[in-house]
Image 1 (cartoon, helix red, strand yellow):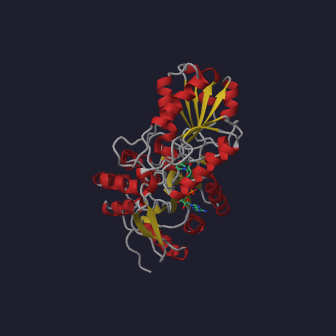
Image 2: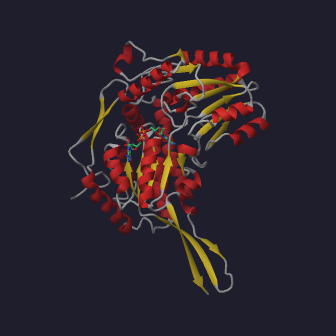
Image 3: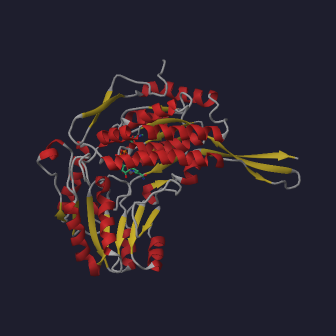
Length: 474
Ligand code: NAD
């Protein structure tokens, strides 16, 4: 079959992206059928072998990555608005995500040159070299919460390392990945080096993961899916980088700067309507200030401006889809049944724009024990559970008492305490007197069930390269 450059092979099944702000159609894409996948993979291998991309000087690859960044920049506003329609995030956040994608391409253009050969000098009769080589064809599978940002976090380093990429975005936010592929092609990326396949995870996603032509898998999404992918990767003995879910503790000690701490707690859970893997979804407050902090958090949560994603001053938009709102509502219902007290939210707002969209109010719950399902499982929505702690030992035991280990936040004016707690908490990212900061140069990933491997930084490039050792007799 003939494939259009850098687009997916297609079946007749259409996937419709519904704008969660108002229920309108944001766009449609054609699903790739598993039967068509062979041609996609073959095309990727052909591009990898014949385009000269992997063999080209890092500088040449860097130039194209910079041009992709330029292309994203030139279309920043259109892309931000497309993402807003695709998944309902406030326009300001969507702009930030396009900027993050631009920065990611620029960063990996810069570090492209670091994939150099390491030489161990002569030990008498030989010299050894360590070279990093691309895998060939890699699969990148992304979730719906921050499509352009998550796509860039995988595609930029995978291309920088010389691989051909098959990108599968979520069926719930399918519109940005084809735009990225189009911009990359226009920037000079050889045809076939970045292809997009579309469709449902259990259909095309699992077919991609199982395909013998895919030599490495990079996945971001839920822990259950990551585990399923990891099983297949284990059976196939191909590396799988897994960025998974979280239930991150956000900790406030009595000696904290409470104004900043409360603002960060609220932004940390209700930013992106809680649909962030690093959302600070469990609030731990030292018992002596628990009531005061909780009241301030609830007051602030109630005052958040929930509105259409392009409304002036909006602080929280709709959830990304109507079916995701049902999941979040079910999560809160279960918290009620577990005996949780709903201090604010706990329902969808009504009237005006709310009636047509997938909105849900910022929700704060307390009165649950740390082992309640609501304190253990990810809601991936605007739902905060609050828990008091007695002392450091009690905090560490409660905060580490989940299967997750993605991130945490600590608020205290004591440097020594922040260091102690930061080292003791099981989390890949520790934010101290700040929250949710992220730079491309700093590795990101999870402990425990929050993932395997690190994206971003040099680690994020090495994920997509395999090591070859060469010895030369002298
Ligand atoms: P998901 O696991 O349902 O889907 C993620 C992607 O995997 C989608 O493209 C989906 O189509 C695909 N998929 C689903 N089943 C598959 C299968 N069997 N084989 C192959 N691919 C399959 O996750 P989601 O609902 O899209 O995203 C929400 C989750 O993502 C949350 O748990 C969140 O914490 C996590 N997440 C993690 C990070 C991180 O960096 N750690 C970042 C963003 C989101």
